[in-house]
Image: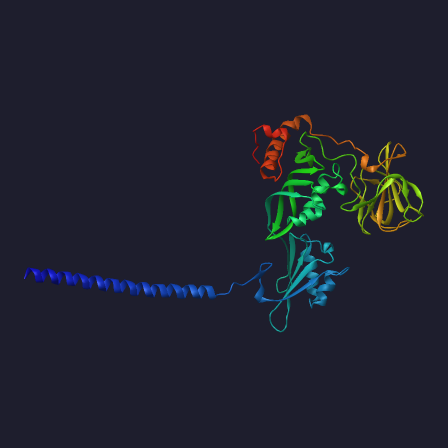
Length: 432
């Protein structure tokens, strides 16, 4: 009897366990199915793309570019915006955006109602990579200027020159704008027309992005550029409220004269007292340097000075002479055109646009004939050593040394190439 009771109890327990397992699996099954159904429902809901913050599927969108000499009023009238609305927009734009600053070739959008009437509801003007302006054309007339969020990404870059600085950027998937920035920083110390295969650089800088699109180079903190086996360093530092670049010893990289009056082209003829003239076919002095460049390439004065000649000659074509001080004069020949505002007596600043490359006068092709005189005697521009401007002043030297120590160590850490700065022997690092 006792044995039968025990067997009965065990069987009852088995039945209870089976029932619980069955119920659990059933609940789990239906719960899983319910969750899966919910997930499917969420996944099937489309993500509505937005354009300038507006739901793209709510409008018919017209893309376009501002034409030359096209007033906004003309553009809007052409797209069926009433004169009364345009007048209100002009009033609303005051203090928000200067309509006279609308630029030719900049992009715009017109958002129209999705029905058959296609009423223009918004006009969006892309003013720059970081700014756009929205004009409401419907019931409520308003104008708002928006700034895109710009993200700065720290970059540590090393590259070797194989053919040119520009190609080094392309070959290493770098922003080509960096080439312009480096040439500006070292414009007084490195002749970028004379870069050699095997030259290399390491740069630490911020690149700026809107969404995932690069919009340019931000702050450049430090650069090491090795040219023909010699290291040139640049460290950014603010002195007298001015951002500038100095070498590892605190000397300014900015000199009295730029190394060249234009960018990234080749020297087609060097300084010589016996050069075979390409047209006249006779040997004669060529006391300057010819920079071959496409017609229209901007030409900049290499230093501060006063324009003492602006004329056209049979051989030099359109030409300018600039007196920099009592010792130095520079000359620029064969312009296709002069820059606006340049005339005899004009004071010009270093790097100021003075004209454009051409082939006026006696020339076989577009180029700049660049001349340099010292005390009235022609000298080879490539051999002129210009003195630097003011270095780091004494009271700033301690702070500057800390900056150098920090960035020199960073250059050493992230460079493909060994760095042998004396300053690296000191372990002090400044926090940035």
